[in-house]
Image 1 (spheres, rainbow, N blue to C red):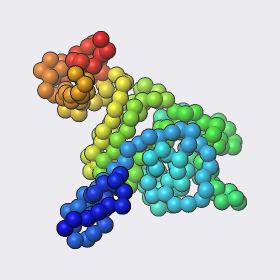
Image 2: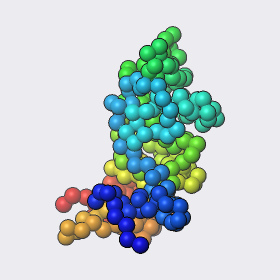
Image 3: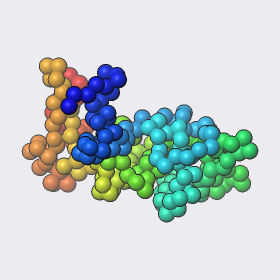
Amino acid sequence: EEQSLKSADILAVKGLAQFERFPAVVALGNLIENWHVSDFHISKARPEQEAGYADHLSREGENLSLFIQYLYQFHQSAFNEIISKIKHRVPGITSVETKTTEEGRVLLKFQDGAFEDPFLARYVSDGTIKMLAYLTLLYDPIPHPLLCVEEPENQLYPKLLWELAEEFRAYSLRGGQVFVSTHSPDFLNATQLDEVFWLVKQNGYTQIKRASQDEQIAAYMKDGDQMGYLWKQGFFDGVDPE
């Protein structure tokens, strides 16, 4: 049966996913709609937001305060885990909370134990905002089937990247596949041999290479070396600019 779409930029699977008579396509459409490609912008996460409802962190993170509020109200255990992690990783932070103003806007506030009054999100560091965003993303009670994050190391203290890499791994074990692009040897040091791929451009085409299939890298990893150090030493063929 031939069908026409109202616009050429609409995927056919999205259109067919609206019909229950195509259960396999419906399942695929639902899967794709729940993919999360993070393009987090710290500047968009700082301002207060109009009061509303957010059961996931948005692509650019502008609803961070709403999602924190949602977790506090409906998923207390996940919220408590996030607060425990942020207290451990950001010196001085003792709590994070939201407040709805009389004008109907939701503020995000950070309490530093050395001060009586909390700080609004606009006054805390970029790294604090970004770490909180990643924690809310990774401890989301309903993980995305596919999570893509670009260069999570930006604005973060290098020693925090090992724990962050482990949390990405834990997220994948909860049922979501994770793709992370990075230029950080510190982040790469926390990865395992079968988790690392790299891209090489040759003759106008991009090739994907797998670390576990490189005998030299595999041998060094077996002897206790770390992936980031091997990268810096030039063992990732075709990665370094010529």
